[in-house]
Length: 277
Image 1 (cartoon, rainbow, N blue to C red):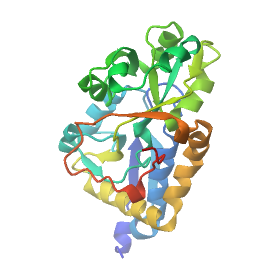
Image 2 (image 1 turned 30 degrees about the vertical axis):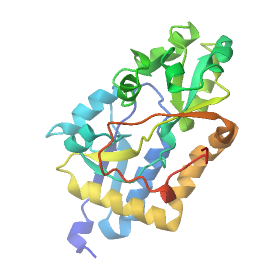
Image 3 (image 1 turned 90 degrees about the vertical axis):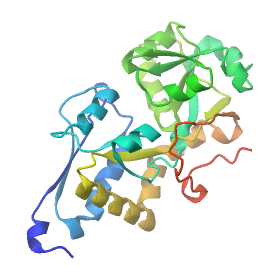
């Protein structure tokens, strides 16, 4: 147990506000972050867990975290060799690698085109819409898939206008994104039959100088794994989507992720799988 003087220190954790106004994609990881701090309150004392003041692209958040005098002191991101060299990571996959399973938003008139896609070679014949600087752009490009990059907020309008064929989204993102954008983009539809998968563990990252904050969050996450609260938050935000999107009955195309660190833990017991062979 820490001395009383140490318990008086408030742990201040500032996470990214988001890329757009009212960005709701990260409610699950924010709840995991704040719960990890609550779980460790008896050991480490009080805390603040709040968003940054400014909206900015993910690339800017990474740059901000790397600064000596950084306001943001935690981000969440799919891991890569490069990121683990720049930052300190907690090797717990926040979404149990569910983020690596991709269901697409498409133009409502193009379902028949997607139904012809059976292999990686077929994927190379269509174009994907992606955000500027997103981590999986490099995965798609490595496999020869055409990627059209734009700001996140513009991608829905571009898809509605048939500027690209396929907008792959995370299972936990696509339903709310569809609901939030269908009014202004009436041609949007959720693709019915295809599932793309690549290993894409989603971690908390910290500036290497913020070891105390990183250690506290990691202790909290491991307590959550033991007491069931980690699984409870995962199920709260993702179980409905897993069932509604019919993941277990979709045909799957698997892609290699060549950018993973060599020793990335992929413990099947802690990851989600649709049990598709």
